[in-house]
Length: 368
Image 1 (cartoon, rainbow, N blue to C red):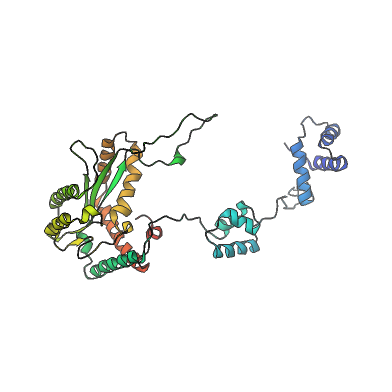
Image 2 (cartoon, rainbow, N blue to C red):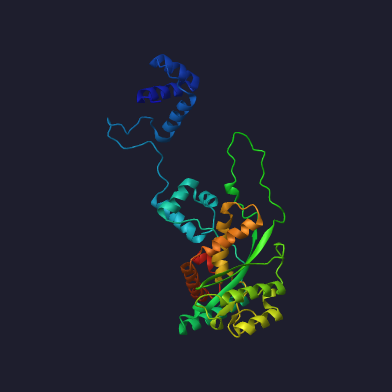
């Protein structure tokens, strides 16, 4: 509803004379013979505006030629911007709520200063496994070995296969923000997940030549089994056969990487690997040790598992066989060019790990 400046002024004069909103409404109707009802909230807003700005007149009118809008003065002054900059410099992890209280600013004004004036963004701190000094030292030693080898042979990574295994639950990953029910009443619905969801365990090996995978840890009936040295060696035998069938791959020149899980480094397993790969092994208990707690340096960990778990469940698989089918299809759809980029990203991670003295690096690099 549009009200004239004359009506606003009359209402204010009446209010300050009577201190009664009802009197303002009665006198307003008598004076202006207006059919439209003047609400109490409208009078309150005019009184508030008058007390804050000393006027209720619209000074943006063409008659005055003024540009005053009646709004409060912006909190984004040079002084406030400088104060926010200093506050962030001292405590970059402080919350917006706490910082706004300390600076005497509204949260909205503070956010505008942070984003629009200082061009800062709220980055989430990632949670990673703690790396001890010994862990960092081993990571540096391993990366120095890779760096020196690549300095002398830039094609070394053409013949390295990185391996790993991962569990995939039938229940998948649930994002609670996506489980929304629009309605006028609270729905009688809950999202249920089993305590021990059915799962499958996939093993893969990736190199610039592509991906050999997936192989499953399961019994003859297709039920998932825990990984032990016998089952792991059975998977390695399948991998060895598949490796021999790869076009352009000479098994006698290939390197094999694995992490330090117990089934991987059992005496029988290491003996099996040495018989086939000789000294071309990147693993605990071998000449070149793969550093512990280094998923951020292993391509299946920093690329493949995340990619699969982001895509496998899009089709809403209802059985574990459908999960396995989706995993297989997604892996086979990954082009060789993508594998080349992933291995190149590994080489970059080696350099960054050395620059960070063996510290965490994935929160710096992000996804490949």
